Length: 416
Image 1: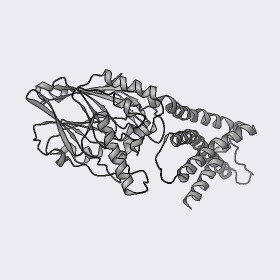
Image 2: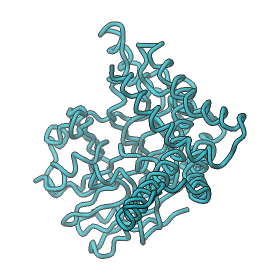
Image 3: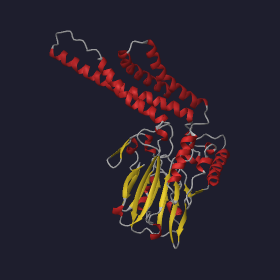
Image 4: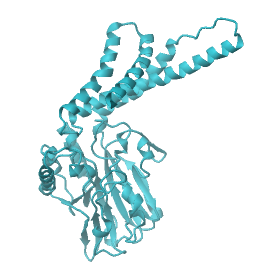
């Protein structure tokens, strides 16, 4: 019944949007092409999901079909919006004329072709932007550099540099050359340590089979540290038996070992310089709403004291907003991801930043501060569902530490 209702609504909207196409062209071929682009991707997507009931993840094929659906309907929504606006105007014009001259026969005005032309022109902007995002934007890697100052930073770590990656989602990749370029770009930053904040895969450990050799080439003299994201547990795949899920998770952890990444599961590691150290604290996923809540910052901080300088890895920024920003252990910097910046938005560094995701997450992209405690939300390295990025580009974050007053921090990204 829910699919029947869905198709009824879609059909009504299609008929409505088709009025613009009908005004623009009388070509049967173009009209048939319009209907094929409208319905075929949706039918293929639904069939593909229901034909394979075990795998509910967005693999490359499904993501491309979804991307086409989103692009087409971004155009249709503009057509519908303009047609609806014109229909309201036509209705008011009709009522006005009828009230003004009730004895005369009044006809409602016909739709104007130029309105459909304007709607088609404006609708082509998000349409072609989404197409561009699928073929170019998803690999438009950007290095964002921040400088953060802390009064209690150990002097030995003044000038220390880390690189943060997040949300790789390897199951979505399809271009080895582009990923190899990104790996080289990361290594060129020559950071002291590398931090990965979760979602290495979409669901299955096997997604890394074609990519672990590349990601195993990442280097940092003080090590590579990683945590779990909500996708890494395999919760979004329907395994035949519980043991299959357990085996998948074991294989996933083994991938980290093979790449030389240190997995932190509600625990910490110390990076030492002479007699000083900083703590890398990794928590499991903790997200608001339906997301898994396995993170335990108290357990992860066992043995640490308030004056220890701490970098917390927490996949979902909700945990910072709920707990970490006011935690008694004084958590200096939290690194998160998860939001992807919704892979769609508008950014003018230092001036303007917008994405629909900001209506769900208070901290969704970039650096935020609360009483000299910071969080950086990485926009993500990969992509999921929609196979592209528009305006919110794949991110490699570089953070440089400075000993000094927090007013000296530069929280607006230097992009390269």
